[in-house]
Image 1 (cartoon, rainbow, N blue to C red):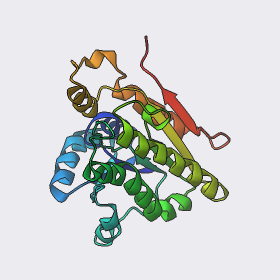
Image 2 (image 1 turned 90 degrees about the vertical axis):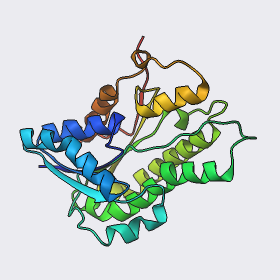
Image 3 (image 1 turned 180 degrees about the vertical axis):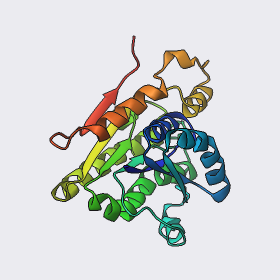
Image 4 (image 1 turned 135 degrees about the horizontal axis):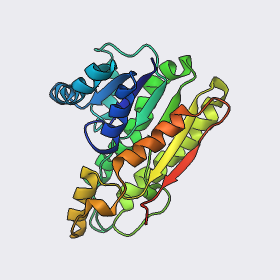
Length: 237
């Protein structure tokens, strides 16, 4: 039984990844921002775990406050080892550079970049123990920035830098690091983006979250003789 820790499992890509791992009987730790959310998320996946023999655990830590993660984890039971650490959570707020306030920049960078860095730092001993895998679900915005996307794209460009540095640093420990760059995906975040853009939302026009989830699983399931470092996923025609 492999052990995984997932952020952003409440909906979208994270939910699809969590469901797939539980369906194959793995142990899945779900990170939630507070105890109430942890209870809700656990209830969401409990039937899947029960049906397939997966083991479901929760961990509480607010990615919006990365400096408090260490304190929060110090008061909880932690996974003894991790075959994969899957960073899938994220936030987005669009706006022109001359409109975005420091509050938006701070919140975006905290959740999308600083929190993944801190969570990785705290969990690396468990990942190293089993020569595990760290996956960052990035974004097409992590490769190219468009107008109105400056804060989000900056956080995702930073996330790419984090992954690239980590890959080199942890190679000797046998830790694999993968960045996945999905295009627009039919998630609650995409609903918010369309609302901010003032556009009508059609989920059929975008990638199914399950398709991105399969990409994540392909990376962590790859035999040890190979290493998928960067994967780009785009909407089909």
